[in-house]
Picture 1 (cartoon, rainbow, N blue to C red):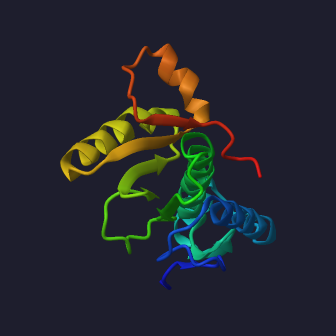
Picture 2: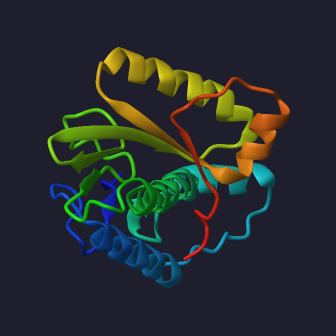
Length: 189
């Protein structure tokens, strides 16, 4: 199997990005999503469709050589990450035009530091995680993330989660997790 390749032009892997550069990257991401559509092939049975979704690689959105199953996970989380970071930079760091961020899109582990993103604010590094999960996986994913944050001994301040789960979380009367930022608009351009 070929290695998954990112088709985005913006050099986000090694560089610290400004708010404007993250917004540009989000626009580029959506452009790739619009250009590289995936169509579910017709198969004879549900098992054939499921195996195809998990095994056959395509160009989907900004990713090449990726299965539809993996693309759904990556793209959902990438969009929560990008939209969430933009919201954080606009709301929490509006008075600091020098703030920058390093991103880890997909499941790229080229960054030695833990976290899906690192915000650089003056002399401080602020880390965060992002994920996009189904209701049934939320509690387990959040517990694992909280353990990783605790074990990392770094300044994690944010956990970005797809916002449609906020009501579910609140109706279950779950404990308040101060780091959670619900990303309500992750699907919009």
